[in-house]
Image 1 (cartoon, rainbow, N blue to C red):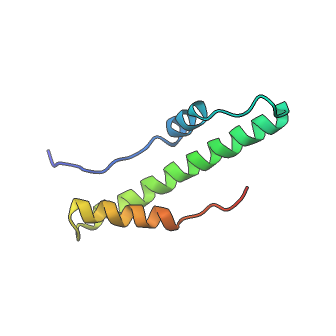
Image 2: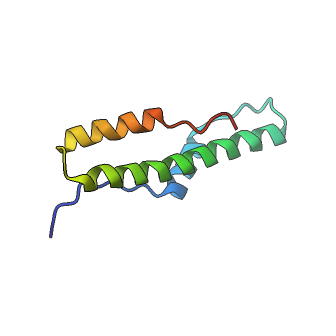
Image 3: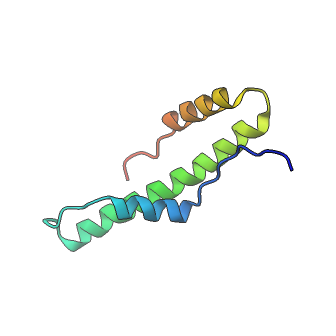
Amino acid sequence: MAQNNELQLDPHKFAELVINSHQVSDDLDPEAIVKRKLTLYLTAYYLAERFDQLETQEFSSGSNGDKEKYQALLAQMANEKFGDW
């Protein structure tokens, strides 16, 4: 069996972990709380999907060592922005 260093995130589970770990002030009205949680969930979900895509591209290229692939992946993630929702 070939060793596979690829890491794939489950976007749904990742987004749930993110929103469950984020505290929103109770001083906000319920709609504002839900909007913040939804924005956070969607951002985490799509960021995890994007990570999986970039990770697959980097680790399937075979041109660099694992450390260089990881650094390239982090650089690409840092350059990706979803903008203000």
